Length: 532
Image (tube, rainbow, N blue to C red; front, top):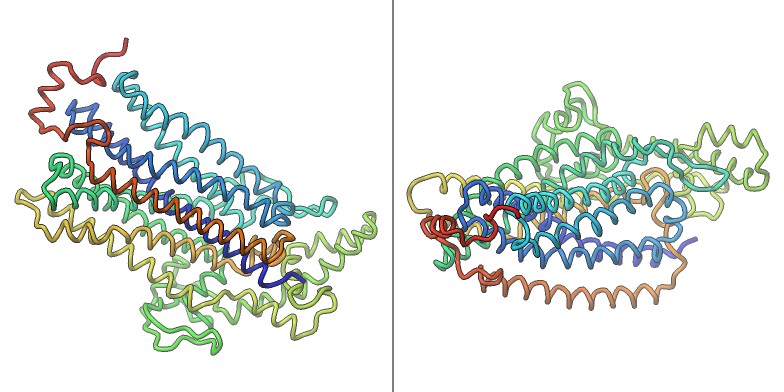
């Protein structure tokens, strides 16, 4: 049996590197679209202040993009180094979208990022705008493929176990791509990135306005960030609801754990606004319920039930028992590949093989499992409810606070009078919220899938490499040290660029509208010259 400490350390290392990497990804997604919008306004109006905005925010995008790429490469190698059996067992399925994601990131994204920075004086205004939009689209499509891979881990469609190769293989690649869980995760994650980019631009612009620096650039940036932020925050809420609806059919246990719903309620189920879940007592104390809301969110109906944890554990126990037969058939096939009866049994009950594998944390041969071990395996499908319950509500709270911040900012920017200073302070202090919501959201998505690395197919504890505890401790310490240094470099570069302002992009300062018109009319703006 696998050493539990080895599994925990492997999970900790991947969690640290993944969550660190995702500090950069959402800001890259959001800034890329905002930059493209700013340059579009510049090309349409000819006002140089919009060009200066594009170049300034582009510098901050570039710093963040470089760190995102560097930290993403590490994660690619971890699949083979720390999760060797996982890579062997599902590599035929997982590897394809991951490879496409690498191509999108390192060829499409990198090419257009280079053209964006070095093409200002070499391309016409419209050609450079096209490059900027392709850079933004490449950044977003790069995220699509990694989320297709992750969505398959949450809902393994379009694939089947091949007893001849003892591996999972693709049976329908289009089903993998259009997996409803993957698509829901993609739009929700991308929208969260847009919120992050909008909050960043809003906060930095507010800092400038509080100090009376680069006012023309900051005012326009504040306006576009508040409008884009409202649209993005609303889309996150709507698309998050769609993600929750996808859980109803594909990850019932995760949904029940998020809601701390121990017993099945009459339809439509209520939403628990607050409570203190107890894993040992299997109850939620001091629960404050809102009637019908969870039923409407989870089922889009008034008559469909959402199963509770107790009911789902009972169903998991049935699947464990059925999976033991599949495991026995698989062992017989290993001894005799021509055993037709074993193949027939495996074909009939193979969908429950993963549940039998849960028993391997209690007994070497699942066929020898006791009744208590079968019960324990069924209960192991329940993630730690209190953490999921509270984390989900923290994520939602951050989302609604950000919506309020964007909404108030937009309302004030649409009025004729000068915006109050408290508005800028509010925007500045809300800057960490999107990162908190995003990191907590990923925790809910990944921790809520436990004990599975591939939901219903492969338990996490069976997916690790044959490493020593010392190896993992040393690499965790090494990653912490290196990533800590990178974090200091990233923060110092970003802060230095923000303090320097538009000068960091070779701009003396943001132009006033009159100056912009004068610069355009005299033909001194290279980007407005016609293509040769």
